Image 1 (spheres, rainbow, N blue to C red):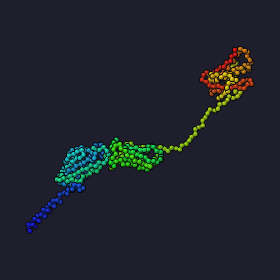
Image 2 (image 1 turned 90 degrees about the vertical axis):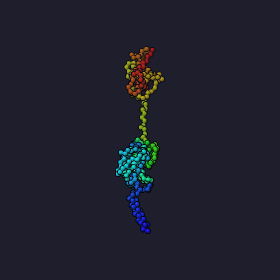
Image 3 (image 1 turned 180 degrees about the horizontal axis):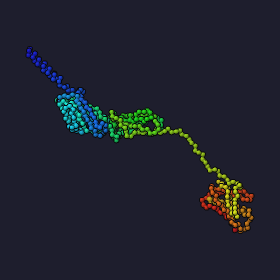
Image 4 (image 1 turned 120 degrees about the horizontal axis):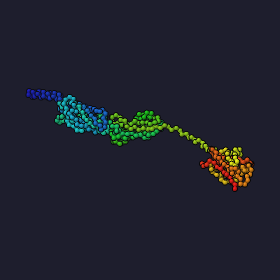
Length: 409
């Protein structure tokens, strides 16, 4: 009986010692339990990360607990990212010893020894050719047998934007409207060489003076380069006359909006005034032709046997007298030959009938002198009882004077 009591006492002491030791040992969370996860932060230099352009990333990791066994941490790059293998100088242990544990272009290993719980690692990395948020992860496992895997740690995202040359374009239809008019406008965004990330968007800012105001946006998810997406704005009322620019932009999920290099423009034309019909001015025509004045015209002056025709201008005149031959054209004048002969005969009667074979001092000549100005008509009046005869004068580009001479055998 004593013996059994003695062994019971020994056993109780042993259990107490083991229990105390167990309480002093840190608790290791079970794999996948969600407890005991550490933290991971990532910063970039420069602060703005542009697609396909190299950048420096700084990772800072802190374990949830610092158990006695070593902790192996595996950093994984975000999808599409690549990294160069770091050197020992790129790794800094914050509270104890740590060493690199191999690296590839997408994963980097670090071992925290002697109960260390944090480190800082600098990595040269290159983002993908498309914009969007990038999240990095760190997986922990305890270097014991069997290994214990701790929950994966995820960093806050790093935003990647597109280069200016890789941005998309924006077009609008229609491109011309009247001021004050109302209608619906269709915008077409076409992804550039940078493409569009998941949950991306594109849109325009409405110009001042248009209603409704604000901006219009549409989803642009996973667009390959050259892929379009359309959206509408309206019914909308155009503002004042002139070019109206719709500032266009695109943005990756969670990232800043980037202004597109090309912005669609709508030309707003002034309202056309009401049409007014105007009558053409009345046509003006030349005044009607008038006949030469009657016998009140100045009489023909003459010297000897020569008559000089003078008179007032007229647009029309009478024809040949007594069926005489057609008018002769010379010096810009048309003079009826028969009329000239008649005038010569009447002159002879006034001065006395000449004897046969005699023609007077000037040989019975009649000389016509051109008149300056528009085509004139000349009235030749006989001193006898006969009515006045009118001779039509017409212009011609040849000589300056015409002499009509009558000779008898």
